[in-house]
Length: 397
Image 1 (cartoon, rainbow, N blue to C red):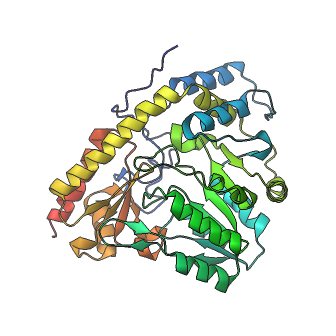
Image 2: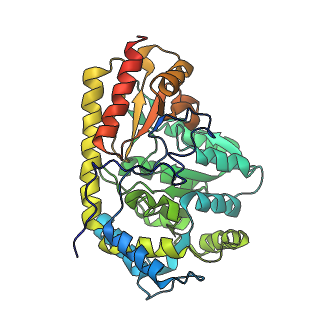
């Protein structure tokens, strides 16, 4: 059987399918006719092997309670992917299946901190991190990334450690690779973060959901950098970004420390989510077993989109620069050289360009003046979006 779904340039009408990306503009306060390139799901059909696996579940036509166990093929598929693509040997006793990474972050916050205790993040960063911390009544501590104005982000390690000590931080949510700034953290950077956390008894939740999209450098599994890092790290992965399966709600969490895993499972059980989704399990197993060809082809298409966007912006949109995208399929555009106020940029993008992007301000104060764009879409759609930005700015700059 050959992979069938490799036409990534095909424009697929997703409207009217209860799509969060396409069908909820008005509810989110946007004009109905905006072109959406915001939330991180792809506009590509997923692997035909996944399609066939789901069709098999449907044809059985019984959708009872589902679970997994050692030897049934599911963990073996997950472990095989990790070994082939990341040279990472995962163990079944580390493994926890959850409905998603954000769900797992919520469990971790409740498992490892008490109300009023501190959790640290590195803004600008994926905005559900701060939402989950606040909504669980924890103290949000921000270690702002340093931006040199030329396209490079780095970590302020002194500020990171100082704020951990001053706020008695219990938990650090690491974004690795980083969304939205696109950094693929080096081994040296992660080792220094880990050493600080080890020294100060900080548990690390390492969100590595984008680790299958690396364009520059090499992804480092945080918990594998030093043996001792396994003892205080929860590593979150999922097929959902890699294979466009977000709606099937399946993620794979790895917790080597037995006590941390026990505490995590206790909070998980308290949610009442006892069994995984039958479709999510089938899709993930098919993806990790047979999805290599689709993944490699989509990977190339997305990288070509990133390169196209970089060229287009340099040649046609003065005052805007694309921060180098080392990882993820989300590009981070810096509008600060246009000298247009961030709120005006937001208005132009929405009301003049008719685009639904992610305004940088939602990722933290240091994201103001930036826009995040999902480039996992047909090239013609991306070109259309960039031309809209070009036109709306040319009318005001």
